[in-house]
Length: 221
Image (cartoon, rainbow, N blue to C red; front, side):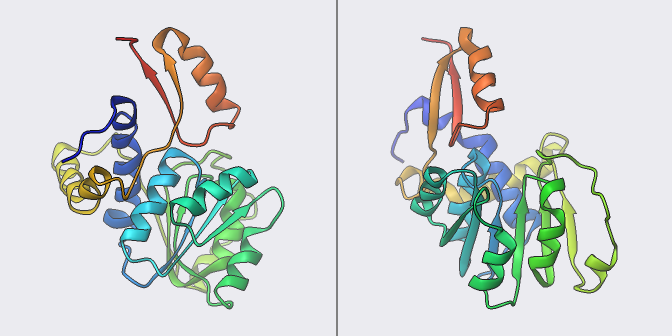
């Protein structure tokens, strides 16, 4: 196995474990399926794009907030990257997939995307909720949005899982990602490295949503 710089290696566990959990253990990604990944330029989003690509997804569509972030997503393997400030991702999905809808949605955004997610989902699609960055309360929620398409809504977290589950996730990581990371076919994008004494600045950068990839704090040693 090739060695990785510590700053890159530090960005692997949370991002790749979360992405693998969402796509494989929860979302049950099958080869040939279409995937929509929100917050594609985030650490988890970038990992999810690459995991979906090597997991056999037929088309990967992602959302991000700038043209630069969209380019990064495409460089990592996304087929289509939607700048949500300029385009409606629902319209793009319908156009790209010929109105058939997307099979699997990985959502870190929550509230703001709920109605569009259900609208552009395929029959019997799975929506995996990983986070709710825009909020968790959904106004005008109608169960018919789920019933009409027989949608599956799956919510997941990693921190509350028991040791047995975490062991299975570790094994899945080894199976689907470790060799790709070692050989640099998959990668971690390090946005910026801070000394641990500058952790306040790191949080401010993250809260401003200007980062693309992982923010790493080191001890300076």
